Image 1 (cartoon, helix red, strand yellow):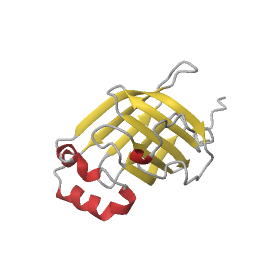
Image 2 (cartoon, helix red, strand yellow):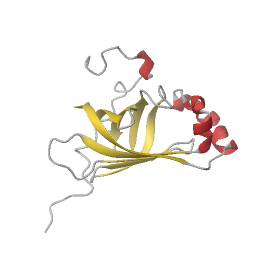
Image 3 (tube, one colour):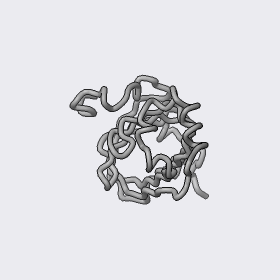
Image 4 (cartoon, one colour):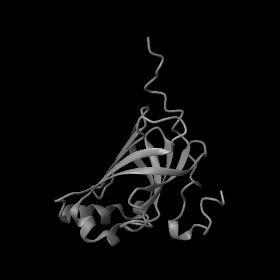
Length: 166
């Protein structure tokens, strides 16, 4: 009989990770609660975008899925791995309007939900751009649950030595 509890998210909640996709894009995620996360994008086509309290679907096997108001879907999964490996796999589904004008989403998304919805509705949504990459976790720490100080500014306002300054 298995002792695996698929509902136990205690190993994820409160974790703060900084990671780099194989394409060089740097991202950061904080698993705030069982159904929410905060994230900040450091580089890539939407670098300097940041979001708080994003609804998330998190399962214990290491998969986190989100759907943003702008129609961007993200799926992150820690693959089967050797202990100590700091790898996971992410897939981002960018709607065409973001690929055409990524600067429209470079903001604190929470303050611009109606605007993001209007961009989304205006489209175009297709063809969707799929970014399917492995990433290397470069920093991880436990910050406890529901900590609004973990991700609280855009990447451009972080100290030059981030995350070494933590």
